[in-house]
Image (tube, rainbow, N blue to C red; front, side, top):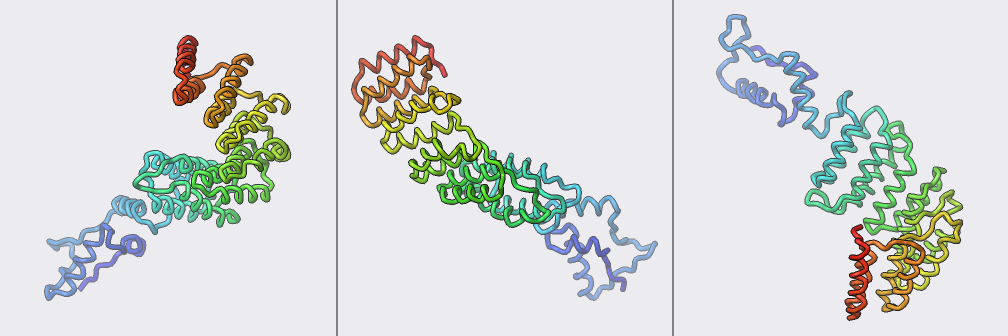
Length: 339
């Protein structure tokens, strides 16, 4: 009897039931347990033993590696291409939590380090992705994956993390309702010695405001942000202004709005800042203050947009001031506001 042997390399890759060679193993066991002898492998045999050519074995090995969750990535496997494909699946809503962790299994198991730029793009897509049937609570998934990255950050399998990585994770924490984690990530960023930019500073303000710590956000904006080496921009003020108005503190928001030109003059208030405070006054029933602020904005040469007019018209209609609402509607049409 001539036993059927597989080369060690092939046996290693085809040992599972999903292998294309599994049927061959079954036939071997069937013959060995039956009374019929296995035909000897002679040149004149009418039942030759199927053999794997070099090309076919290479093809089967490639298929096995692509379908197995335990096989290590091949040397030609590109982390950048893997991240790009995974990012597209995130945007399409087809990436599951298991797929994401499987991706990181392969990334952290390879020899070459994972580049922070590819990681940042993938995490940023997760931070902005809505929940889907494939994955619920996507920002929380990004935080879990980042925790795995932090465990490998000291090894050669991860390139040094950048300030952008921390900014993305802080934003994920805000979207996931875990502002405490976002603030913890910011503290960890400070310990790394990385230079903070205005995007991360704005995310810090967002974390504080979402955590109902608006007074601290005001203090950071007016006094502490310069210590971080950053200059606040219009977005920085808009975050804090909105938080003040949401807390029914529109008068304090107006005071902050009027301080903007005095803070170095680098960030004059724009239409977004004015519209935010106008909406806050209308929400508190201060119709007179809201209209007065609108006129002040017009005198400064700040052109209202469609959001500004929509805010005013909606509030006046709810207050049953239909004549004033019609006046602003005609003014909007006359100015041909389409933005």
